[in-house]
Length: 190
Image (cartoon, rainbow, N blue to C red):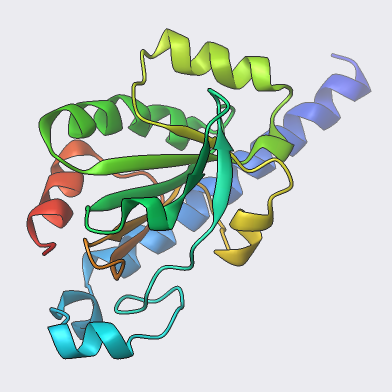
């Protein structure tokens, strides 16, 4: 084995190890949700909610272009439940949760906005190929300069925000979600 291959294998192994370490740590945090994550937002509190990234905050608005060339803003979906997911086609946990996201999208009235971290992709064609191969029908938004990911302080990916019909963050998940967990969060939203 050449030195180059060994170095690449060590780097890939270290990245994978960090991802697993980070994911396990986040799953432990998610196993015991805080009181704040379980509260229901009252109508009066909605008008006073601050824009932020925590449960109970109003989700920050943004505008991005979809893979199909349409301009989309989060505020376009006011009045609807939204699953806002940050992902990349090269990310193994992201790839693993996409079939469950498609099933979730098909079986509920939730709107899914899947924000691709486009700057990390080899090309937009690789994103399009991934979407085609997995027959994804929900909107894929391209965060070409990573400004939305930076505004949402995304680390790690995937990261998902469940946003209720008033635009309030009801749940934040760091790491991949399965269908059952998506449904559990959906059913607890107003």
